[in-house]
Amino acid sequence: MEGGNILKDERVLAMYDVRGKQEYIYRSRKIQEIIGASCIIRDVFEDYLYPAARQVRNKEKDMGDKEAVYRYGPKTAEAFSTEAFEQRMQEGCYIGEVVYDGGGNFLILYRDRETCIRVNRLFTKSLMEHTGTLKVLCTILEHPDFMRYQEDNRRLYEQHRRNEATESVIHPVNNLPVVQVDPRTSRPLSVKRITAGAGGDGRKKMSLECAAKYDKYREEERRGEAAEEKILDRIVEKRGEESLLAVIYIDGNNMGAQVQKCLEGKESYEECVTELRRFSGEIQKNYVDDRMEAINAMLDGKYKDERDEDGKSRPGKKRRTIVAAGDEMAIICNARDALDVVKAYFRDFPEKCSSCVGIAVFHSHAPYADAYRLAEECCESGKAWMKKKGLNHACLLDFHYCQGGIGISLEGIRKKELPEKECSRPWMMLSHSKDREEGFCYSLELAEEMAALLRRLGRSNVKSLLSAALNSPADLEMELERINAHRTEPEDFTLGGKLDEERKRKLIYDIVLVYDLWFREEEV
Image (cartoon, rainbow, N blue to C red; front, side):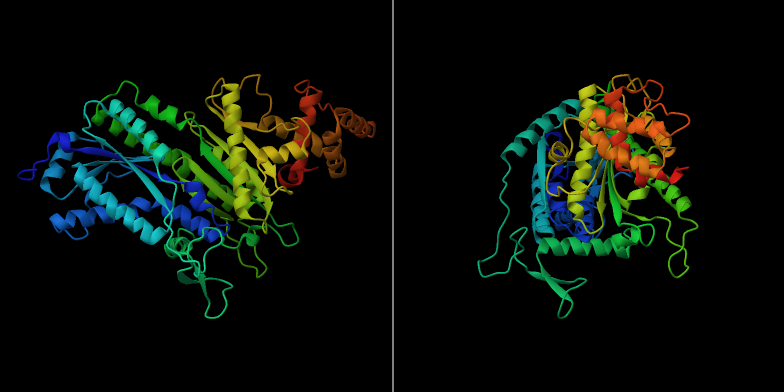
């Protein structure tokens, strides 16, 4: 570089990818560590990459805490301009610009390759020193062509896939056999933190990774962003009820296809990046911000007249948010609220959006990490059905009642608990298109219609249907005939011919399984 001018062929486009997110988050079974790990990943670039960039820039031109990487406002969706980028780089205040941040992608356009490498060295060192084992993979594309973003993006992803296949899976180890280590990670217990239940001086030995997660959680708590119900047992609705909670995992569908659709007919960086920034802002609003507002409003209304043992008003937001970013959300709530939370999520859901939901109902003393895993597998079950049925815009719900089988996959549990395919799940929650075709016969609407019929039978009769439906079609038919024999007006359990015997059996089994949680409250 001469005279501070940046030559066009020196620019590099860098893509960052946080590796092993789930492993890093759910290596612990403690919810504070899980939330802290999620927040570390959310803020990894804010906390470690941007400071590294400032360090590099300040060695050339000391500007203190002024940002070294130009960032666009996520709510304004600022248009990308090559002229503005050139000017910023030449002025010397900035050494790069965030091209796009959203949907799991984070791209920075650096002024040159050497600057990118120096930033990444400091960034990686800072990660190792402060987070323990979190890994971020960076792929660099040299000589980007500002007139051909789509081609550059294709080349970048090809190189990224090669890097993924060849990246090292070895974590740095710096402990000796005589050192106390974390049994989960084999990392040395090198720091102490004050934790509940710790003996002696109230401090507990832990690894650097665990300490980083605790520290991040407490930082969020001080900022008020974790100021929800901290003790899960308190989310249980009333004294004397079983301590059943639900973890709800929601994830958007076909995000890659949606990204490609928004870029149709566009080619240059200015067109594509500007559109991607707009799309990213819409995703956060449509899948998280508006949805959380609807969920909070529902819970506030549901619990507005509730009071605790001291006569004080109970908090309306009786839930614990674990993850809420991009198109993904994970929430813990009272198991009785779970279906209402999902309904609130899909209330006024934009027609162009699509999500699948997984719910795992579990006891508050059960390992949360296992419940989360099952909720995620339920969500994936819905996505698998979408692929199998060729659906594009459907929103599906699957759920699991954790009564055992901790440590076993959802598929493994269902093979043991249920004879061949006795499950009606997933259910169609919502569809704005022709996806609601005859080939997909189960829906929440249909389940609620059947539940309304079952409520007329009385709880004892309803609960007797569970084992009958599980045993065989003949057992269920015999039980239904017994119930109808005691009624002046026999019920039509086919719902007017909508269900054949096998479909009826599967749907009744799934409804009765969660009847007391989601469908009994309107019993007459």
